[in-house]
Image 1 (cartoon, rainbow, N blue to C red):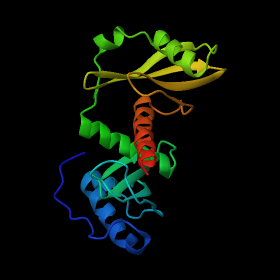
Image 2 (tube, rainbow, N blue to C red):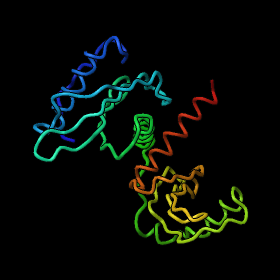
Image 3 (cartoon, one colour):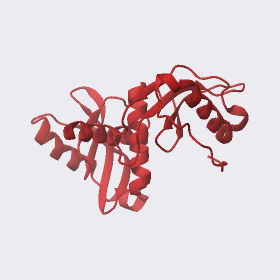
Image 4 (tube, rainbow, N blue to C red):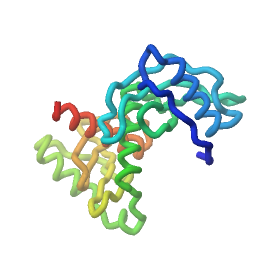
Length: 208
């Protein structure tokens, strides 16, 4: 994204009764970042009352299509958060919300991609066998491979791809809280952000 001038967000938190103000804010923000490819209209938003991320608040997520000869489907996230936009990726609004939370978490905490030398030292089969022995005893992992690796401080989060019970899945492994995702059509970094966002949502629910 290119540089942009400061843009004042509406005073009211995102909600149906102030949709017009937030819609105009989102369109203006997108024009600053997409230029001629920015949309002129957006579809009905989805609202989230709390972000589950400290410092953020209510959020609105608008689906839109870029302008031009080859329009592409996207989401734009605005509200009491750092605005951002994402490819649609076939996500639901709830999934897009979680991807946004995961993205924000990565930026705030300083998550980075591991280098190739570190990737070469990792054995996905050993890690997956350990996880499966705890969660699905007796279920082997087939075609295990490393899809992505991230550094979170001194910890190493990995996204592995394998076949379990005749189904291809992504598995969050390494020092990352484990998780299984069937959305193997998604890029691994998107699944990782989705996982982080889901962990934040669950943590917020557990506190309620």
